[in-house]
Image (cartoon, rainbow, N blue to C red; front, side, top):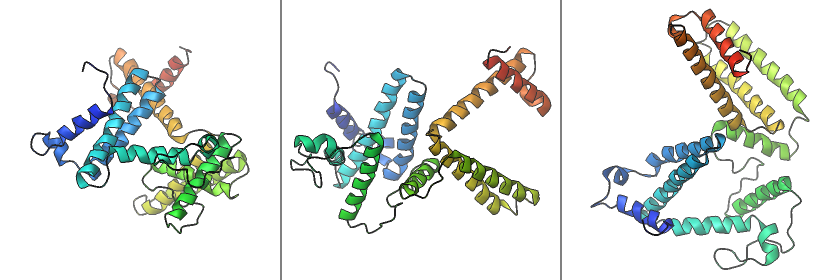
Length: 288
């Protein structure tokens, strides 16, 4: 392209790909359900690029994620439901409506050309935590205005998000009404309690017959771990990604060490594999 690309170019490309007569067979046969998994995957690719501080890849991954938005918007346009412009208008309206401390005080109009509903001209927030509380309060007002009569503190938490993220959301919402541990010590104590309950279940002997109870108890451990991360202000997803990367890095180091000595991990007993693991840790820490 001679001129810089803009969103109109991408919209035109997607419309062409979905053209029933001359488009791409794969793109044509997709629907919202079949594309949903790709949308989630691309969001994780963005998170991975950020985690690696790889800005070149971040640019590409953000493009892939944007393509997913355009793909969904094109399918909706074909059905007469909405189009990309409606998506942009909706998010512009939402962002101005939920930030009255930024826009209302300046007399800012919303995306539809009117004044933002419910936004006070003197609206203000003290800090990011206060803004988070106001954001949630505004979401609740919007749900009620739309006729949602669920008044629970847990209302509106999507069941489509990753379960670890949903666990933190549930806990944070409960904490806003005072249902929370006062610090990390009782959370750690609860974690020990849940681990003991799992140990008891394993001690019963028949794992297959006891699988449902084990699932329940292990789920409790994971839920408490998410709560511990929340109290520590640690992102659970980032913590697990770092743990996965650390394991992968050390395991690959083990494989390299074994190969350098003319063997393969799969040929070694666990005791020797553990020895390579310990060496990989020492090397990583600069102790060898």
